[in-house]
Image 1 (cartoon, helix red, strand yellow):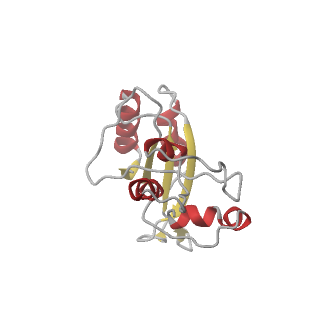
Image 2 (tube, rainbow, N blue to C red; image 1 turned 135 degrees about the vertical axis):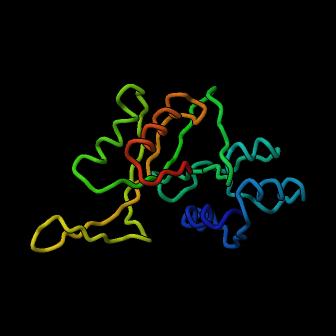
Length: 182
């Protein structure tokens, strides 16, 4: 038993182990909990070692993912902001957009590095679905076409950290046309 994504990430290994029947459930820890509560002796869970520890299960095999470089990332999402603690390492994810222009992204990212020394661990850009193309007339014979992008950034800091709060405040006030903490 396991979440469909977890089962898919272990497909080849499970087949090599002779496990032909797989049951997809809502979450990996829930699979471990169900097995423990029902005292199932002939069923296993694709779950974390923490789930095994929490529910008193034996670990039969570790690192069973097919791709050794595979990493599964879990996020905490909420409609209302949740202020995390600062007593352990946190990673925060944001999405923002900027006005088009030379050096705008460089300036926006500088709010993290300059005085605050916040490490950026990931950055992706995606075209803005609602505004994929913008035409700007810069007094040229042909209007220029720009793509608007959303930038997804992960950084190593808790939202309870004043440095993170100041960086995001600076980003929103000075550069971002849109900003959301994920």
